[in-house]
Amino acid sequence: MAPIQNNNQRANLLSSTSYCNHNRDALFEQYHAYDPEVVHRAWAPKHLKGRKPGFACDIGAGAGRDANWLAGQGWEVLAVLDQWN
Image (cartoon, rainbow, N blue to C red; front, side, top):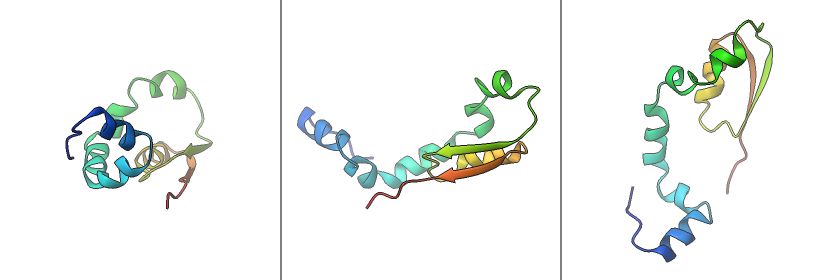
């Protein structure tokens, strides 16, 4: 990712989708570098233990890492992503 040079650039990038668009490849690699088992370790055991898998909706699913993980746990998952143009 290109470094942010000053506060004006930071404000412009963070107040729009241009930051994500400009850095999408690096962000994609960072996102997928984390093992879903590690990502969900803090909340999943407490909230899913003893529950029978059912239906879940992943709002803002991105590339589907989390939806795929939940589906792998036996849940039926609807992954929703708003397309930015």
